[in-house]
Length: 104
Image (cartoon, rainbow, N blue to C red):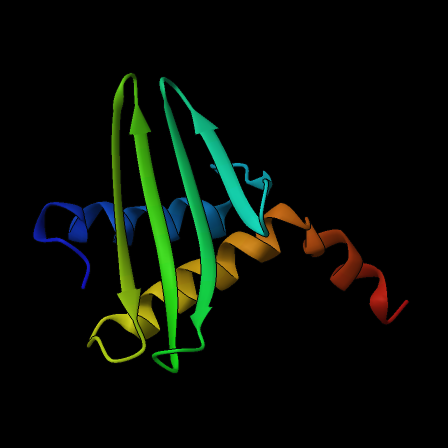
């Protein structure tokens, strides 16, 4: 589940990512990274074969503080995290220009 302290942050994160106000790039281990002000955000998907569960793993790093959490496909807010993840991937790949030129 998304921790209560992060709930409004994640809504704003989605909006700012979709609007292009935040810039994401590919990171290590199939993750995506956003460095903004004095913080780093990392998001990735992980499938646990033993548990047969998909997870969206999120990490907020600010200075020496590293705050991770994960949301599994059994959690009520899983679809929200998948939407954020998908927006991040589209942002990192800068697909807007590619989509605009697709039908030209």
